[in-house]
Length: 435
Ligand code: UGA
Image (cartoon, rainbow, N blue to C red; front, side, top):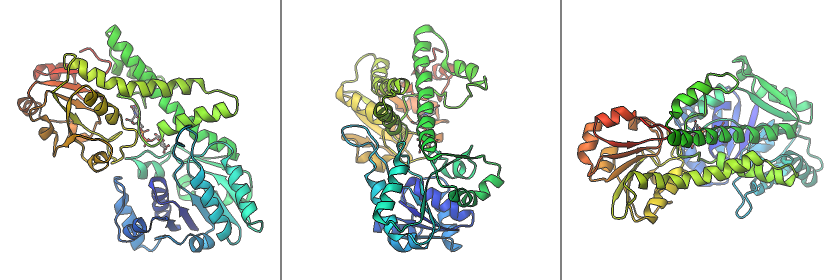
């Protein structure tokens, strides 16, 4: 099939390259000429394991091309994916749909023949109706079916998630689109991924409900972790004990410094707004948003407490800056709140992240960036492990301790074992565990 993807950001690029890898003929479109030129040269603007190799293989095979010329790519396509950003709108937290609607107008003018227009971006209920309305108004002759097809991939595991999804959700209001979408995803349901057809509004809501539920699950275990600390219990064992119940499931029960990233914070806030708009408040999600915001700030207080209540003039080493490992994405990362909180109390910050330092330099001030975990430890009064990169899982603890001024280790991801850290002479604080 001939497929055009509008928006070569995270979701657009991964979708495009994976669909090309399935054998479709894909053109990825972006307004940003320099990004397109880089992609044509095989330079991928984001860090995502395996993505660059897959881009290069599919470009070489002639199945994947890049362009800024939307009308030409859309004019030739049987399926057009809209994969532009829907950030939080400044001021009110609604999803900002201006990019989606602008693309809908351009697509309307460019389509030829029957075309399926697929919204891949995360959009509030009713956006598909508005996209269809815009296309019909701009070009009454356009023969278009507007489909919702939300994406559930995780950063850091994007290609694996796209190629082996738990399910594919497709929301259609025009039966002609069913066959086309089944053809787009044929290689996946050969892999037995369930293809769930539903109506467009339901599909749009599934995406928000899924992300909000996962955010709630994390927030629940984070609160249980606080209770474990107060009551003298172990959150990892509570998580295991409840996660073995199939109705609950073991995933997304890792207590930590609060969720971040480009999706959960924005999508939970947007769902709260959607609920308010429809007069059907999403109270659990509202509470989740506020608990998580408070938690990210509370983590700096945890570090201060571990340092004996005072960090003024002390050097705190931060291990990991990105919102999770295997990405260079710093959006809404807990590290940002933690660093600000510690700086407000007079601490000096030294930090290292395997991929996130380029983005972090633009977001934080007065931070010294180091070249490794051991550089961070040099002369530090305390270390805080914020992001669980693999290279932080097997640190040489003796070496680390010998480099530090005082051996205080705050492990916000429960990577190490309390008794092991005690054995190495660390004063060790983790999340929801007492020994
Ligand atoms: C999330 C969803 O998991 C994807 O299914 C979805 O497609 C994506 O949002 C999106 O809407 O585009 P992502 O933001 O890449 O994916 O990352 P996650 O792995 O879900 O992690 C989100 C945050 O939750 C991270 O800060 C992570 O550290 C935190 N987390 C996750 C925990 O604190 N504990 C857990 O048990 C799991």
